Length: 276
Picture 1 (cartoon, rainbow, N blue to C red):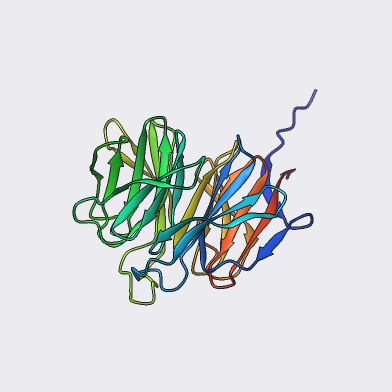
Picture 2 (picture 1 turned 90 degrees about the horizontal axis):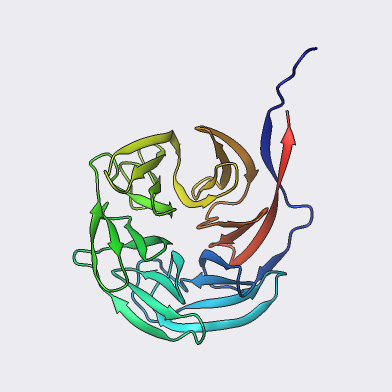
């Protein structure tokens, strides 16, 4: 009897997708499965300007705006993460702790030396926040914040994901210019949280923004060229081409949720497993 090995790969389809317009420079989406809703951060203007007009929107899973300005009074909100009953939101040199029941900001934390906080990820009672300008990744336990990780080869960390054991980092790339272009693409890196030992998952993959977990591996995206990749067993496969400025994506089940900053819209795509 002959035995055949069947390889499976992830692809993405927009056949049954939805999109919503009317946002203001949406940068990040986080899915709240328990409440069946999405949080969308709106920068509203320049991503480095402290102007107090940024906000978070609430959107249903089926693509309807629940509340456009659910939580307000931020400068340029970007990455977010669920943290117990709260939502953590990065905001330039600080991050906010928001009550998910009310949308009220209950705490604002300003890490020492922070310049451009970008993404946040959390698992259990620990969160990590990346500073894209200084290269520092901070750790937050709900009360105290402190520098956790930095490395000479990681000057511009952006997207983050953690399960509490490993911290996966999407690097924007070295030599970042004023227009956010880089000398070469960034790596996808895994850091052991206990030992801080770093391993490269995929080298020079792109100007990486969102890092999202799937059953098979990860979905990551390149902000500059709009490419979205599936990463499985250290191999990256392009699964979708989106416009430039597709930012901090998230995945829940087989759906990718994507914010398109320059186009002021968010959209979805469906992940499909295919044999090859």
